[in-house]
Length: 94
Image (cartoon, rainbow, N blue to C red):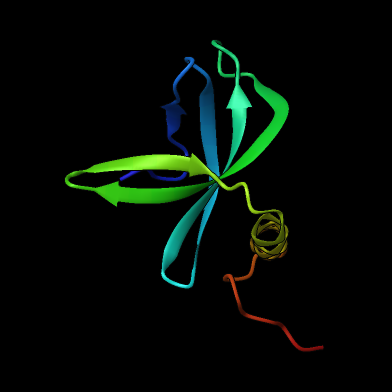
């Protein structure tokens, strides 16, 4: 299974660094940035749907704009929680 921090190579030899993951409606999604051969991040980001087939895992870019926009919001929340030092989904009251 692809984990956060792994680099995956897609068809066409494009490499993506997995930055975050989330699950929505029982489906696993991965937020990734394309990296150069020397692992330097680019400004190209994608969200992939993880599809398990037999004993393998395939990553399919999310093409549904509405779903993509919802997932971007989810990933923003995950990153914001990490920056604030909170567990994902926990809101701190003042």
